[in-house]
Image 1 (cartoon, helix red, strand yellow):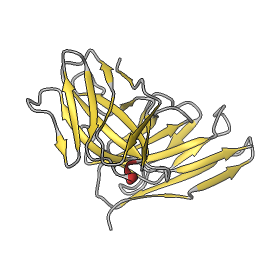
Image 2 (cartoon, each protein chain N blue to C red):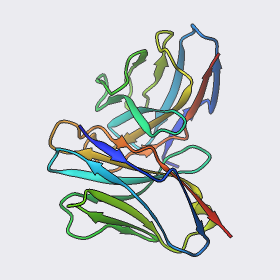
Image 3 (cartoon, rainbow over the protein chains, first blue to last red):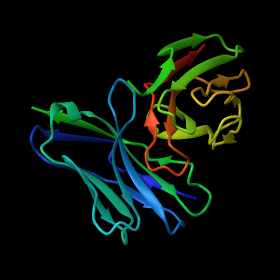
Image 4 (spheres, chains in turn blue, purple):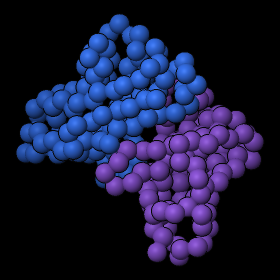
Length: 117
Length: 113
């Protein structure tokens, strides 16, 4: 079984500051992928960043980076230089590749980020 | 523009009625998915399909049915057997079921009274 835990229901950050959204996971699958999605108030899910469990380097995509600490089973999302448009719900998700669950994304409960002036 | 469309955005039904949610994609993706989202929760997988005329149950398939007669279309029927049908429903697609990224539609908010 796979589990994603996001312990921060809500976060505030000032514009132009960096913010870290926490995500821990649990899986028995030796090969897995970790994802972050953004959900604005309009409802659609927007893919942000992906990290494979065997990737040597932490993933980065523009202002997004994933702080992957395999031993601690954490995959925190770092957003640099926050913008007002970053205000949204953020979901961490994972999938396993070797236990027949590759088709399934398991999601956390999300963190609501509010960017302030 | 390539993407996923879901219609309608908002849907209201009386209890006891079946309702079908539409999902269409023009991304030429083989795999399609249906998720349900409840307030304060993440997404949960209802059904997924790897290819035309094939689909598999997800974690919460009870009270739902799907069909995949065309590659582009994956409609979801919420039947009267679904005990708590009021929720936000999201459709997604990917190149294959093991593809890294799933692309999501805008969602349908279903309210059953």
